[in-house]
Image 1 (cartoon, rainbow, N blue to C red):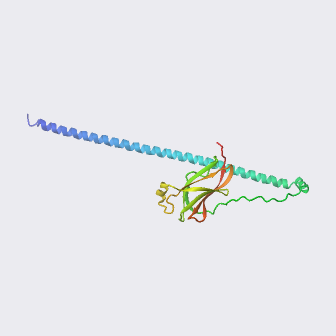
Image 2: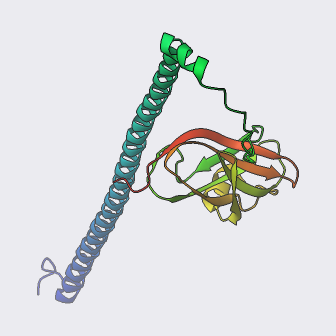
Image 3: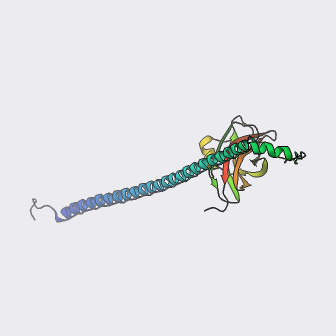
Length: 235
C-alpha cells in the first residue's frame, strides 16, 4: 500500500478515537439536557407550590375580611338597637301617661342583685406575637381553640397563658414548638418554646375577648384584646 493511503491500522485507530470523542460529546450533551430538564422540573414544582400557598393565603385573607365585615355590621346593628331601645325608654318616661302611672303605682323596694364575680382584662403589655388561628372572625362553634406564639419584648419568661372572656377565665397550655419562628427571630432563651393554645366557650352574642400572659410568675398582661361576635350552630 502506498504511503499516501497510510497505515490501515493507524487510520482505524484514528477513526475509533474520533468516534469515541463524538460519543463522549453526545453523552455529555444528553447529561446536560437531563440535568436541565430536572432543574426546570424542580423549579416548576417549587413555583407550583408557591402558587398554591399564595392562593391559600389569598383565600384565608378573603375569608378573614368577609368575617370582619360581617362582624363590624353586626356590632353596628347591635349598638343601633341598644340606642333605639334606650331612646324609647326615655320617651316613655317623659310621656304624660307615664307620670300618671307613677302616681298610682308604689315604687318597688330596691333589691340588690348579687354581683357576678368577673375579672376585667389585665393591663396591656408589649409582646411580639402571632395567632395561627385568627381571633378576628365570626365564631360559629360552641368552643374555640386559639393557637399562636408570643414573648415579652422586654424579656422574661411567659409562665402561664389564659383567655379572659367577659371576665371568665380559661387556662391555656404553653410550650408548643415553633421552629420557624425561632429560625426567623433567633433563639429566645426565656421562651425556647413560645407556642401556646387556649380554648374558650363561645356563647351566642357579643363578647370581649382578651388573651393574657403571666410574665415570670408575676402580674398578668394582655397580649391582645378585641370584641368578638358568636353565632354557634350557624352555617
